[in-house]
Image (cartoon, rainbow, N blue to C red; front, side, top):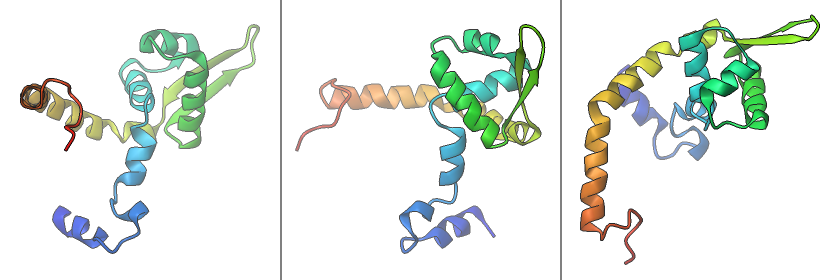
Length: 138
């Protein structure tokens, strides 16, 4: 079965929720902070909460906690609790999370190759549409 056949099978008659076969993956992997968290854990290995928080920069502790819990629930991150004084918790990417590495590598390659083209297209569009960067009113 080819990629185009898979897309055609989703078809116009499909339930909108299932019309795009990759929609569930996009929901899991590409939410606001999920990708940077997975990337950091993949690139830098096991980390404590504070290390990960520093590495990500602008994420709040509340959001980082929420995202890590969701990633653990989805099986993409492993949380290890050490009952020490003071208690220690470490996070690492799971095998399932590591299986996303080829996807991230492909996206990184696409970004390196085409992001400049996207930026140029945006500038061309903005120049044509009056520089607002928004939608043109009709």
